[in-house]
Amino acid sequence: MLLEATNLNTYYGESHALQDMSLNVEDGEVVALLGRNGMGKSTTMKTIMGLLKPRSGKVIFDGRDITGLRPHKVARAGIGYVPEERRIFPNLSVLDNLMMGVKGGKVDTSNANIWTIEKIFERFPFMRDRTNQKGALLSGGEQQMLTIGRTLMGNPRLLMVDEPTEGLSPVMVKEVRDVLAAICKSGISILLVEHNLKVAMSLADRVYLMGKAHLGFTGTLKELDANPEMRAKYLEI
Ligand SMILES: Nc1ncnc2c1ncn2[C@@H]1O[C@H](COP(=O)(O)OP(=O)(O)O)[C@@H](O)[C@H]1O
Ligand SMILES: [Mg+2]
Image (cartoon, rainbow, N blue to C red; front, side):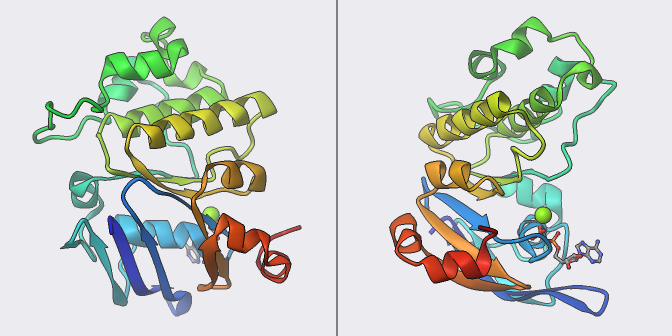
C-alpha cells in the first residue's frame, strides 16, 4: 500500500471536520474522493499533507508514519499536492514557477519516468512557448496546468489533486483529464477530488464517497455503478 490514512479525526476549533476518516491508495492507482460540498474532502487532503494536524489517526506513506509532519516534509516524502485554490506565483515567469516545484535533496535520476523541464514542455507545449511570460498572464486552465507541472517537478510518487477542473472550459476540462491520465501512466498514483463525475469515472480505479465528515462508501467503479442508492445518497445527481 502506498498511502494508508486510518481513522483520521481533524477539527477546526471545536468543529469535528473528519470523523474516523480512512482511505488507501495503492501504487499506480487513481482513487477518486467524491461527495457534496462541505463534506470534508479538502480537509482529508490537507490532513494527509500535514497542513492540518489530526487529533488522532495515522497517515502511513510507503510504510513510513508521516502523521503530523510539516507539509514540506510530507512533500519530500513523495506526496505532491495541488490545492483547490490554484496557487501560481503571478509575478514569476512560467519557467520560474516550474522551478519552484523542484525539491531540495536528491532526485533519483536512474528513474526513466522522472519529470524534467523537458518532459514538462513535451506534455504542456504552451509552456515552452511562454517560458518568460508572467504566470498572471495565463488563462485559468493554463494556470491549473502550471500548478500541476510545478508539482510534477518535485517528482512525487502520489499526486493529490483537489477539484482540478473547477471553473474550466470544456476544452480545458478535457486537457486536464488527459494530463492526469498521462501522469498516472508515468507511474504516479493519484488521489483525486473532482466534482465532474464523468472526469472522475474516466480516471479512477476506485472511489470513496464522503458523507458529512465521514466515509460513506468505498468500492470499485463497477460496485458504485451497481449501487444507485449510494450514488443518490452521497453524490449530487
Ligand atoms: N478553515 C476552516 N475553518 C473552519 N471550518 C472549515 C474550514 N475549512 C473548512 N471548514 C469546514 O469543514 C467542513 C469540510 O470542509 P471541506 O473539507 O472544505 O469540504 P469539501 O472539500 O468536501 O467541500 C465544512 O463544513 C467547512 O465549512
Ligand atoms: Mg473542497
